[in-house]
Image 1 (cartoon, rainbow, N blue to C red):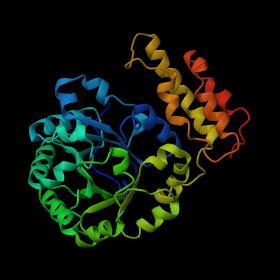
Image 2: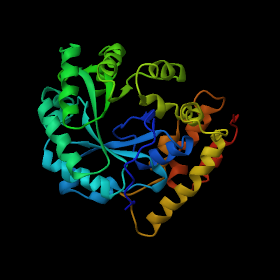
Image 3: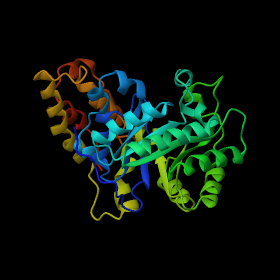
Length: 340
């Protein structure tokens, strides 16, 4: 269990963040991302309150100290269960609790949480208040700009206003509507049009709130443009598929001196972590049946755009070599690469 963090955040701490992504941003992915950027704010996959109330808390909440700053995203709609789960999150050392009001999947809707909660702003406000009463760390909300065919700015404005009255001061806004019926989660990330102007307007109307924009953002130039209008930018799949994009973030957005790690240095920095994780499994701490691929699968995009990137991906995806559980596979994958 990690020590509880202080609640004092440096100004602009969430200037750049990496989105919670199911099946992707697990603890191993976050350690890898932290090896590239020291300051970018990281998020867990969504953890449901049911998993924490009735399941294996350690399996869902354990993480490594080097991941800080890291936020726990919760999925749920019962204020008491969310308060209990938020309290656990603080006890385990997370720096923030985030409530998911943006996931459009039908499975999540059946649990009466995710994007469908935008239709019940007072319930979300009650959930936020319950969590804020339970913890001293920040409680934030991630949501869409609308649901289904309700594309009016006023719908989102009233949602944010009601939840802000409960004490939430940070809103992460995916700048698309969530279509609750008829589109898959993947299609919900691509088909509804992006409406960045609605998020900019939200910041103008609520200048006292921290507004972070999310959705379809892929380059530093795009980040720079958004930061002229909002307080922070959250990247999703681009950060996962092209993770070395994050290498310049510490200097560019957090004023950190010095050069970033090279790609080779990132790989070398991961070796002690991988060895320690595999060693703990061999010692009987199974970590849910950890295999080398559980870590290396998150690293396939590290060489994106470089000569030899295909060789790198193929080597790290070689099932026979992965089965040996030898971290030296990372060094073999670097052979033949043109490092920058």
